[in-house]
Length: 189
Image 1 (cartoon, one colour):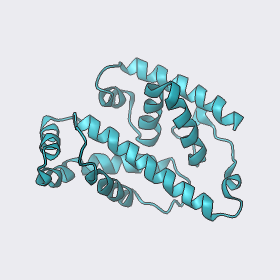
Image 2 (cartoon, rainbow, N blue to C red; image 1 turned 120 degrees about the horizontal axis):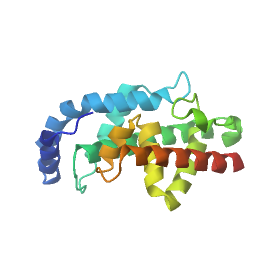
Image 3 (cartoon, rainbow, N blue to C red; image 1 turned 45 degrees about the horizontal axis):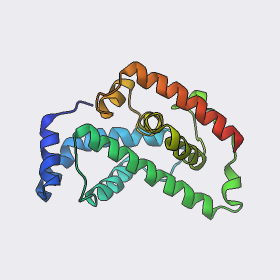
């Protein structure tokens, strides 16, 4: 993922009320969004009913509703899209759990956070709750988890998305800290 000035310029035009700018942005960002969606869905259980294309389209529809957003860069857009995709998946998981007999208790399998982001079928609702809790006291570390686990971004890309304010080594330390924190939190649940 390369952050580019033309995308930033189009984001600024869209922010200023030029709706045609968003239509010009879509093809420029689709490949990145599709890659993010595929990475996010790779973390889901086998046979997930959402497909990457559907996730991108749903995220795109929600992004279109962000009419008062001040866009800083392509990285900011990708970061926001990752958050939106996370919310879509968590809402989908919550609906699925609510529909099952036994509700949340039906999926109490242990989550092996040592295997994140490559672990198979973690209970996304429990992970989301723990991540929200982490964000209260350690927002940057929670953001790193969101971008790495849900967005499939590398340490270099995460540092870039976070505005270059941190190094890739800091991203790696934040990931290690957050993973340990989440393990403790989720083992208590």
